[in-house]
Length: 168
Image 1 (cartoon, rainbow, N blue to C red):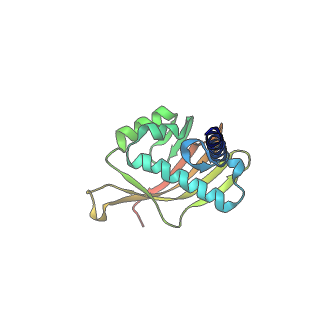
Image 2 (tube, rainbow, N blue to C red):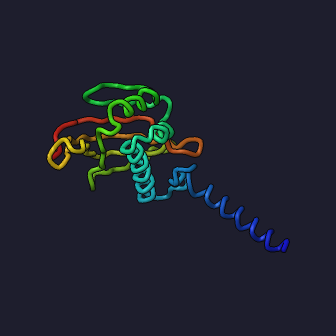
Image 3 (cartoon, rainbow, N blue to C red):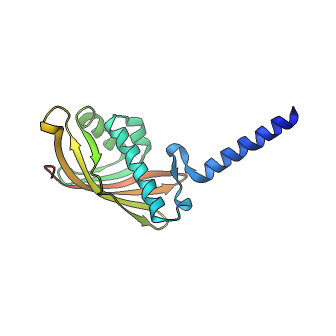
């Protein structure tokens, strides 16, 4: 009986330890120091992009706020600079929730390492306004996002969203 409990405790401890080494917090994304290839980095950033925009598309303001730094800088070619997590989440709540859906354009994602910091993500995204236009297409824009790995978690620190126009 005691042997079974000991084995169970060892197995649970090993499972928890292995999970802590491989993944960054609850994000389920590899930690920066565990990433050993460009493919792994791209996979990690693509997962972060998916999580961020699932929260954006579903108006999960708490998750969005948890994925950005307090001093987030968001540069937008049409609206200018917005600084801070609260300004970002308020803008999403007031202008995006229930009005827009974002999708990454297939094949547009580029990811580059930023030594000792994290990664730079670049690509093109499409915005849909459900029910408002034929095929729901609203527009398209290019973006650059900087992801920092710090204190066991990936967070978005800088965004540049530009070249907004009709989808191609």
